[in-house]
Image (cartoon, rainbow, N blue to C red; front, top):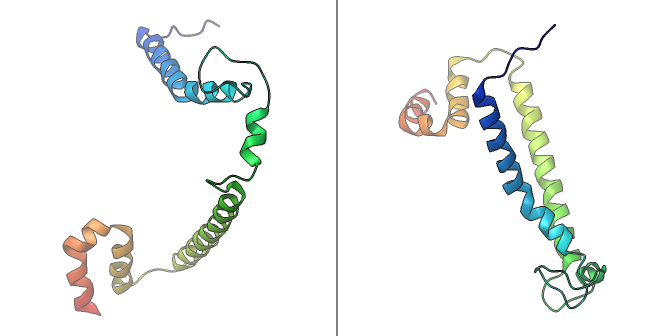
Length: 129
């Protein structure tokens, strides 16, 4: 069985997607390659030697910046956000287990559509409360 021929626009879009991927991941790949420069090198080509010198500098205590403190704060913040998201999602899931009355729908509208709630929903909400 013969495959259907692709329209010409497919190849143009494929090239466009390829350029998008290069512009998206190209800088990251460049930084990864340049991270292995020697001690005299920087973020420039041609590379001045090959070593893992900069990885050692990253974890050494510095007068500016504290990578382990930043890591600890980021981990704590991520845990707090994770717990809050799971709790909010769980409670929202429990709320949708039963049918909502008209009054409850107006309260939910405030959280679901903030623009609509400010424009039209809030006066209705306060009328029923």
